[in-house]
Length: 141
Length: 380
Image (cartoon, rainbow over the protein chains, first blue to last red):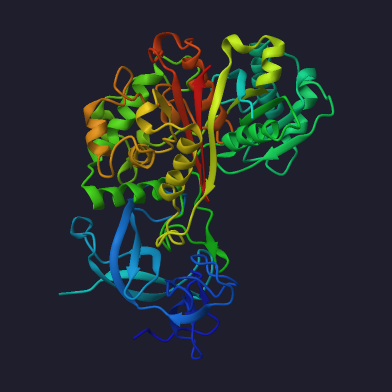
């Protein structure tokens, strides 16, 4: 269950949506023509099958499996390293990138089950946590 | 329809030239290629100028101010790292259309240092390290790890690409770096994004390369056939939809599309190719492209690099120029520097790094976003 967030929060990824109570969720689309689920916003045509007007908004699952990743050791000034940049296949469709946290590097394995968690985030130089991002966490057990 | 030939080509030695004007860098390559063909700018009917950093600033026209402003049509071409090869293909298409006989294709880049990419932002702030990574090294690292997932490819196997390509460039006086990097040195270098160490990432350098394309009719008329190299196949594709494409930039599917189209146009297969210059922007990429270009079956890239067959003297030499890893990767220039390299071998003029008996060569570049251009050249 996502935590309630502060007012006027700003999502840090295009697929993070806020519901009527400003609770975050993952938003995607399902194509009524080809059946594909995609982690994008509603567009005029489906990128997979090119059918016009067939994309319908859906909530994406908030868990999935690790598909691939890298451990980033060197980055721009101010970026905290190392961090794990992961690509996750969400259950039921849609794939998204994000940081994998809460796991030792040598415990990472392909297809490990992960859950999506949302976090408030303060941008550098800002007071107050006005941004919200998602992270992937291992599912215990 | 008659054939189209490369009748002149050259490149400048890649390096760092922060104090030179980019127009002068481009003009140097253009004049070298014209000299190689025995032609002048007055003979050229159109200019295709591939470049990334100044894509919207009329770079081709600015170069003509250093070469000769003849008023010819100039098209400035940008397709990320595939810009140079796209410019070459556009020149080829222009001659194929029947409108022109002689065109100049130029690739130029003047770069700063440091990481490429990562400029992603959302919600008003940069998201690098907060929501995954968008840098080029991490993108190609992730693709390498995907290959490990699918086929068990090891860090060591990826690192061998750097050993091979750095060794090759010792024989290439146009390369930026020209020294051996033993395997342990590659693997112990600073880790950028696993499994890519600093020595497994291509270097941001400045450079330019140029190629002159000519219709068969005009080449015969001008007596240029002795050193002419035929363009046997040309292909350019964008990334087709794949399941992960929207989250992870694709370079595999787009390469397979372009390679298939080029092989079909040329009427040849991978086994017919004598040497290849492919897009080793990062060491992981080279192994992916062994499979994408059909040099081995899917999953066979690790065994292929282990076998040594893709080194100079092997069955299918790859990146004997030193590749992007060692020769350098000025983004817009690379696609035409590859043409220069293959052409030089097909002419028998590659000196110490000559691939003996080379008759058919293949060039390959990919650009983020994505594009892939593949050309197949044949000794005339």
